[in-house]
Length: 186
Image (cartoon, rainbow, N blue to C red):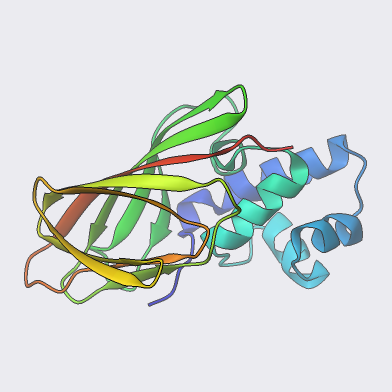
């Protein structure tokens, strides 16, 4: 399964990225190097023509000193936004709320995975962690070299600097919430 943003957020990302880069006086080459992405990818993202991973958006937001939410939402909006869409229409992730505090950012997400679907996340920067709570279905959670099976009502907390994987091994739709804490950008 791929880890990509759906079309509904492309225009927000394109506009927010371009405006933030220009406000900071950064060339595309300099931002691309800072975020460890190719200049060609950055050009495509700014044009709204690239299917970009959540990890790449995280790196771009960090390089610009933005929160992830500031990059993917319409300016001035706090409305939930679907940020990831799996291969199945039933698999997606929605950023519900983001709160920037001194020294950290908190995010609340709603996830669902169709039976048999997975999401593999790239490692986050040091100091990031999350708590998941399963609402329905079965979550097979892998992180830090171990695997855990969570049922409805179960929770787990862990650091995300080693990457992690969500998988729905069941025959029913999996729904869970994810709360993330990460160091403030900049």
